[in-house]
Image (tube, rainbow, N blue to C red):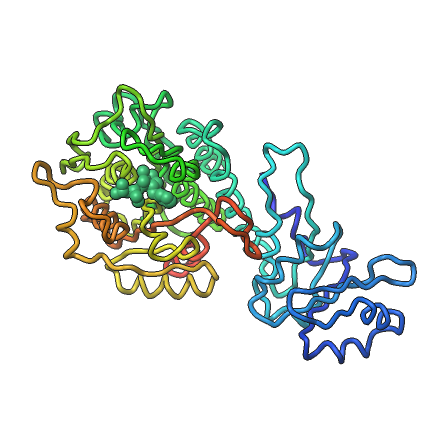
Length: 459
Ligand code: BES
Ligand code: ZN
Ligand code: ZN
């Protein structure tokens, strides 16, 4: 378990190596103010203040005296690369730089992440003293939730099935005394037939995890996360290339757990409910089949066009339950379609809602928090794409057109009473590392959503 408190230190009396941020333009002036020996050293290293370069300046004894960092401004995310470059030690950004780089602390913590559960030795990262202008607790909250989400996604499926997802949910719920229940076996089959049907071919029992926290009088915010612990595709089996990353198909569940942890930690004045349908989409003689017709919790019947479109089935039943108490805000997060990635790539998850104010607010929070999201439409005419001649609808459209939109429209059929409904089709994975975003499992949308929920339901 990663703890950002071990990487980010509260401002105070640490003996830290100062990091001075310069640009190519300001560098000559800084250079002229350095001691003679340091000037010679900078020249010998051919340091020019170019963005993305740094100069480690020794003192008279040969120890590290200070670090000069070349940058071209920005929000501070790019400074995260220092965390991977510098030797172990305690560092601090010089105050003058702080305002223009408000994300430097968060980005440093997000960069200082390694998934080392299966490694003989964990990588050690240099530590950073938090700037005075930065809310230490807020950064730690965001960083710890993000790293928990990454750990959950990165853990391979042999060590992470529905039971382990339940354990992870209990770990999030119990420190805050949230009330957790789990439905499985006969009760699942009766109450949540689609969750049962998708999960029944695995030796690891499918289940619905449900926990609530906060005052019953507070506004109801419900988060639903897709918890497919591995997605083989079922009988419509995926090719090897498509299956390779499917341990991450519980990315929606991981993200709602991360968001729940932040909301409870910050004690936001909401009645929070988390719903996670947890299954493995596996294959055996019991597996649900193409052509089967499932009866959902809501009563709607669904013809199975493709057993690989399993996420919308388990979410359909969980959303139906969520909707029964008419929550003020209902959000689901899911690694739902490959089509979302075709449209927007891995780093820009689409979101869907018909609540115009919510859409505008979320767009603003996503940009402000550097947690990028992009609105896509619940385009009504595409409802025809997943019609069925034998059931109320089909779980997969005939064509591959607008796959992320048709999946979103499918989910919305299960939501009627919620005052506001939002769906995020996330990827949950960083395929190529960027500063603050190492390769692997990724939290997406939860910093934006936390910011939005904090603003919407002020204390
Ligand atoms: N888990 C996948 C979606 C996915 C694939 C997300 C790759 C991220 C990366 C989902 O269960 C799935 O297989 N969806 C199908 C639906 C289709 C059969 C209608 C898809 O998107 O191709
Ligand atoms: Zn699938
Ligand atoms: Zn899936």
